[in-house]
Image (cartoon, rainbow, N blue to C red; front, side):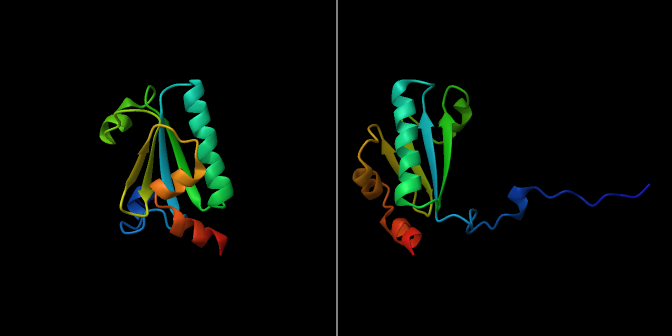
Length: 118
């Protein structure tokens, strides 16, 4: 019987300096359940990623009721909370996510937007 080579996970292969090499920006949106406010926050951030960042953004939506461990690890105190994980430094926006200009400025996504337009 042949021995199989050990499997390597995606996490083991990732570059520790740039864990998301194909994306310019990585965002995490924490919401609380399927409320109207959560739905609006998801729509606004997806719209931001599609229109302003031209798909150069990876978005992860996390429901704190379904994944409380992630919320605890990220120190989420209120929802909706939008976190820019990459590029560093980490930026956080809490609360009203309706104004696109404030989202870009608050998350300091101007340079990411310029890269997406090239």
